[in-house]
Amino acid sequence: MTFEEFAQTRLPALLAFATVLTGQRATAEDITQEVLIRAHGRWDQIAPLDRPDLYVRKMVLNEFLSWRRRSWRTVPAANPVPAHDLTADHAAAYDEHAAMLAQIGKLPRRQRAVLALRYYEDRSDAEIAELLGCAPATVRAYASRALAALRIELRPDESEFATPVPGGI
Amino acid sequence: MRTEDDIRAAFRALAKQAPDDNDVLTAMREQLDKAIAGPPQGARRSMGRWMAPLAAAAAVIAVTASAVAIADGPSPHQPASGALLKRLPRYYMTLLYTGAVGQRIVVKDTRTGATIVTARPPAPFHTFAAIAGAADDRTFVLAARPVAGSVMRNSQNIEKLFRARLNPAKGTLTITPLPIPEFTPATLLYGMALSPDGNELAVELATGRYHYQLQIRIYSLAGKLLNSWESNGAPAILQPNPGNMSWAGTGVLAINWMHITRNARNTGTVWQSGVWLLNTHAAGGNLAGQSRLIVPGNALPGFYVVGDGVLSSNGETISAICYDPGQTVDRWKVEEFSAATGRPIRALWRVRLRVPKQVPERVGVPERRVPVPERVRIPYWLPGQAMMWSNASGSVLVLQANLISGPIANSHTAMGVLRGSHFRPIPGTLNTKLYYYDGLVF
Image (cartoon, rainbow over all chains, first blue to last red; front, side):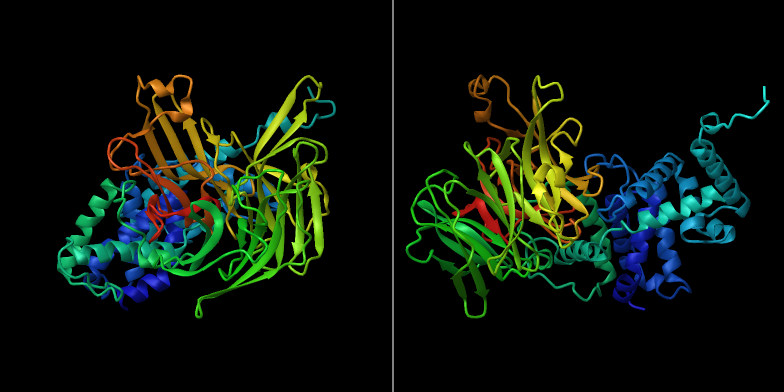
């Protein structure tokens, strides 16, 4: 597979993956572009690999984990805003997604990466461990902490929905 | 489990917002082309086939690093590249400044800057006053007046609408009158927008005793009035700019106007300015009731939304120019907003201008103050009302900016492409006599 074939067939998926990782379209675009330019320079080494797409995906992941915010260049959005139609029905879904993504955005990058790989890419813990360069147990620990944080922060206030118990105290 | 399902759904929604892969490919090709071309000397090699030697790849990394350092400050003399220009409509039309504005219009080739055709209004009309264009960049609607004078709106003119059809191969523009009644001094034409398919025309009219009422009418180009809305007695303030209205393929029309009403206690007024969205298929009637203020003037904290918001043709985003007039630094942003929620998504471009102290003109006449670029590498600043065009996703914009030459402001208007925080002039638009302010359409 030539680099051009690779870029043309795999770029949309790479961009989607980078967007899920970063939560920001502009950052995703910057990261993907820089990774592809580097991959282009080393394509004769990447192309013979069994899974060049996995290798480039790992480059995207590493770029995300080491990405330094260039505040003068990219201005973070107030919230990641998924694109959707101009109908009121999407408002509720938007709010749910925005709330979830805002919580995910607060997580450490490695925990966010584990969530993206597990729930967006549907990868096994072993695959995630390989991509992140750590042990599967570490992946599970990251995931567990991330899910715990999200559950805690997303859990509605139970007192708000408490139902009076007849005869209760 | 609920949380895990929510994560999946949120990620899927987020993935749909991924950038256009063509944008990334185009930007990457540009960087690779630069790397291969190297310094200005020597012929520039095409990098279209991507097959570069390893030596060039090392240069790529170097160029990438330097591009970061000057990301928001491209050379003012570096025009938009061919790959970028191919993402714009091929032809645009604008009023031509020839001593008096609007006596002719000109159609130009976006990629080369070459003039395709110029035209005068059919007799007895004398001056073109407004223009609108369809998505095919071949179909335009022109408003013409029988008298000379400024294109600024006044109550002394009637305006007749014409359809113009471009044949670029022959270099001809066929202008035919539209069967739509002329607009009289009682119904001043403030703005026009063509539907993307070029079959319907939206006109923005100022009516009423002091022309403080706003009417939006939708006509078929066969002359039938299809729908209309009006501000229903509440004063409205309009801006007669070419980007005043933009029409998405979803049938939604974005209108920039200000709606003024009495407050609930009838003790004062409530001003609602900004970008309103109107579904052109909705029932006619009360404009404020049927439309929705989606990007109010204070939508971006710390900034005023000063430039006309342009709706992307897929109807999902609105891009507008925002301004923060500081005491020592003026800040300008081109901000992208969600057309569904009005929330800011991201800054597409940022310009900061240091306002010099002790400038006498500033005292009492703030509009005459002289802006100075905070960083010399930022060659442009943004006047208001300058958005011209958006591609389907809003990732490529055409807008008007002023070129700053040297440390003292000496601005010249240029129309250019904003893409990935880079503004690059379109060939042939810098320091020309094109009159962008009141008429330039793709």
